Length: 65
Image (cartoon, rainbow, N blue to C red; front, side):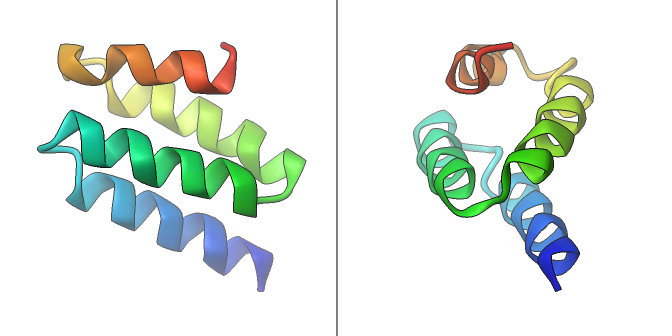
């Protein structure tokens, strides 16, 4: 079941990636709701996802990469 939450979070983040503020808000919610190992997986996924989205680069600071 927890895996489903991580997949759902990724889907939401992909859908709101057009707006940096909304993306940041959803990322903050995800960090507070996911388990620590899921946050680590999300961090890895996020690094690949935002490679071509410079407006989302500052969100990596939320994950302390």
